[in-house]
Length: 159
View 1: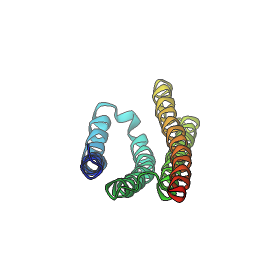
View 2: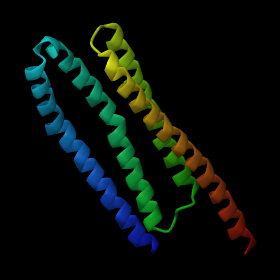
View 3: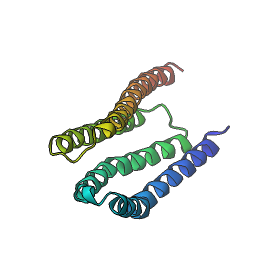
């Protein structure tokens, strides 16, 4: 697959993911909260704090989509192994770490305030673990792309 076609495929996935996330934040989440409040009215005071936390956690996710778009642009320009991409992967990893920290801290605070079900703590831990896994993968990718950029630069200088 050529780099420009690969870049377009990546951009389609990024656009689709961003659209799904936006629809989830704007429509699905509020509708789920309404259903939750109807089924469990005794827990309705949990809704607003959890929605605020989820919306705050969505900000780094949408930021990561913007960073991903820039990486796809560079791939389309046949500049895959550059220090700029290494830095963009590092920014992506930091966004994933920030998102995991915010969600994990919010979950713990809500648990101590009595606004989290103990059974949901396992799900919360899974979300935090997934975010940390993305952080580690993107940090490793940043390191490897940086090394590849250095090798490519050395190679270009010797020819």
